[in-house]
Image (cartoon, helix red, strand yellow):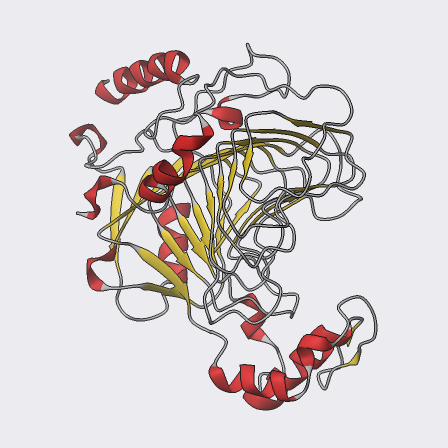
Amino acid sequence: MRLTVFYTLLAMSLTIAAADCDQDKPFGYCTRTSRTDAASIYQMYGGGCYTYPIPKDFAGKVVVLKSNGQDMRKTIEDAIENSENNIIVLDGSNGDFVVSSNVEITTNDKTLLGINHARIRTQWYVTDDIRRALNKAGVPSMSTNGGGGTLPNGHMVREEAEYNTRKMIIEMTGDHQERYRESGILSLKGCKNIIIRNIVFVGPGSIDVGGNDLISCVRGTKNCWIDHCEFMDGMDGNFDITSMSDFITVSWCKFSYTEHSYMHQNTNLVGYSDRETTGFLNITYAFNWWGTGCKQRMPMGRAGRIHMLNNYYSSTTASNCINPRKNSEFLIEGNYFETGVKHYYSQNGATAVTWTADNYIAEASSLPVSVGETVTVPYNYTVTPYKEIPALVKTKAGATLFSNR
């Protein structure tokens, strides 16, 4: 009975607060079920609670995990998929959680919270020896569009750089099954009402092998809120959203790459190809930080309606930040592009882009122009003045919640 009352009060509060850009409330597209109808409210609650400490009402519905120093993939997956667990708390007090491959989430109505500097990292990573061997072979100058050949394990690869990278790693590691390519962390598959907050995700280093993303939303995953997390060194992408996934908010997150990354620092893909089905991929990116090492896809989007609100860009290695592509619609407002970010925007084949006057580009060679009809979103929000964005995002974005008890 007490839980029923809690859910009722929570739903009432979200109806009122969904319009507020508050660090402790879901907002944006994750709280909707239509790309145009403002009345189509979705009560985003995850497992019923998304803050910490967890209320006593959830006794028996919460599982707390700590690292055992071994592969934690199955332990984390079992905890999430167990129908008795509404809330999964990852407690980092014993060190990093290590996973050998993606943890798959296929269930609904779950909250994942990190405390005590919770980090999940991949077991495999790109070593200095691998980087040196690839450099010696001249891989960075090879084509990423053509060439290729048949690998020692019989697999055909159609890109020169990927072929030589995978061939080199097979020869160095003896991993003919190429299990290292499964080095990702979370894969949300066809699930709904998932909240993930305050967790650091560390990948193996980006490398051109057609491997797993650090995190992905696929197979029609809907109504998810990914908030105050950090993503670094994803093998393929840091966080990709594809395959008719929908109504997702990514807020107060930080994306970056370190010296472990080698090639393919393409951080956020929306829509897997030009064949992506239209009418889905309604996504809000708000108060995120694309920082050190990010080169492309911040995000690159196809088919979706994407709201870019008050994000901060500081990556001086960027070759393309915001990139609307085929069949996409972008609303871009209040974003801040720092000094040194020269390649801030390009579009190719977008249905519509609304670039508002309140974006700031420190080194603007020319200002982007809007195309098509004005893009709107079905929720209320306030655009924070761009002057406040650098200090605000640099202080608050990432795993900064709950005082990391």
